[in-house]
Image (cartoon, rainbow, N blue to C red; front, side, top):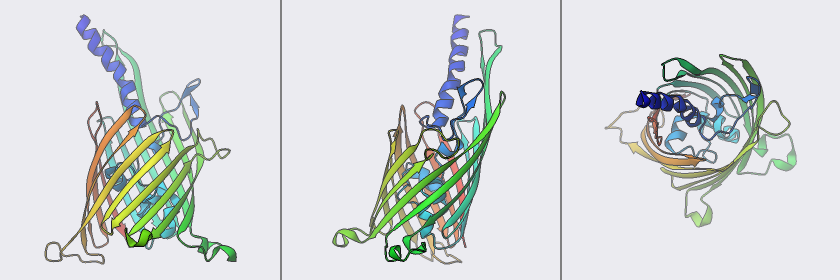
Length: 323
């Protein structure tokens, strides 16, 4: 009987472990109050958006390419050369699912995210349910990114190599006890140098993003991230992000062009295989990540896996199309 009680008690405590893991660090985007002063569930905006970025350990603030820039650093939208749409699906820890969809054109982007968790039940020694946790979140996001040349100010039009962006977020959450919602505003900046340091490397990038700008909407504590990305060659990208509160994300990607006789490509750009590895440390949580992608013409398919110290791995699948 005592052994059975201990097992059930561990299962009840496991709910807290799952929630802590899903939060991935425990910072809050909106931080509204639910259920008599208890802090709301972790925001879906904190669940490491992007399949390519996940494979690179989440280090993407300075990379900020494609439609994924919408989620990490809106300044990257300023450099988008063609319209792009993409989506991802994730099944996390056997108890939750995440669906994202986004579209972007040069300078502008928008998307939605749907996250559902549970219900996960805790039981006492008699097998009776003592607690149950489950919730549903829906988020909408819109963003823009611009270079100085896009501004109607003549003094800025000659400035090159940097861009800035702004992102607005709306979120609604529903639990068994209550429901609520809120909004937040984020900002980002991205600097790029082609062949710096006497052409020792192909490209150097610096990025910075601030989430939940103070005084705007019902946001939680601000969160800032600075990132560095280096391309020693056109096919290799190395990146690291440092976030505050303290977190470190690092990873890399190697793109391997495939000969036409191996995989013919019906569209522009040929066929490319990408291999990615990375990892991150955030509070009491650390993880290793890996992934790969296949681009054939305008179509992109990506997969990523993220480890966890105690729980099963997180799998993500994404598709994208560039027009």
